[in-house]
Image (spheres, rainbow, N blue to C red):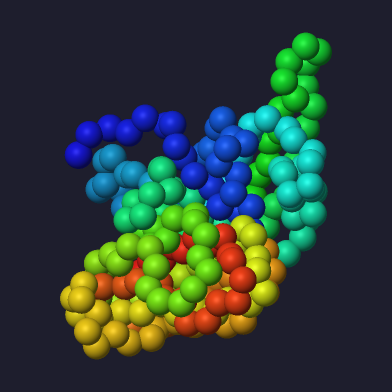
Length: 249
C-alpha cells in the first residue's frame, strides 16, 4: 500500500467529532522502559543494558482553531478537563473499514489563545487513565465499522469487517459514539463465520442510549471462532448520529 496524506485524520471524542476543528493530531502509544541491567561476569567484554516493558500508555495531543459555540470545542474540552473517562476513536480518515485506535482516556490539559493577529488556537492532551475492563491495555487497534452518519431505524448498519478470530487470552472491544440523540437507541455487535451473517451471534450490547456521548462495551473474552463483525441497531426511536469502532486484543 502507498503512503497517506494527513488530510482526513478523524478524532471522535466521546460524543464530539473534533475532526473539522483540528489541524494537528498525534497519538503516542508506549510502554515504560524499565532498566533491568545487572552486573556482568568479567568475561563479558561488551555488556549491554537489559530493559523490560512496564506500564502501557496512550497519549493523544490535539490542536486546532478555537470555537466557543454550543456543542463546539471549548465547552466540550472544558467540561472534560480533569473529569471522567472519555471514549476516544482515532482513525486516518474515519472511513468504514479503515484502521482505528480506540481507547478510554482522561483529559488533563487544555490550552487556548495565542499571538495578536492570528487565529485563536487550542491544544488539549488526554491520556489513558484506566485499563479496558480488568485488562491493563491502554489502546486497541481495530477498524471503523460505522462512520459518522444518521440512523433512524433498525437493522445492520455500516460495513461488516473481517477482524479475525478472538484467541483464548484475547478480548473483543467496541466503542459507540453518539453525536446527536433522538429518544432511545440500542445496538449490538454481531459476529459470524462469513460476511453473509446467516447465523449471526450477538457478542456485545449497547443498551438504551438516550444522550450524546461515548459508550464502551463490556469486553468479550475469547475464544471466538467467528471472524466477521458488524453493528446492528436493535431499537431506535428518533434520529441518532452515530459511529462505531471495534477491535481485538
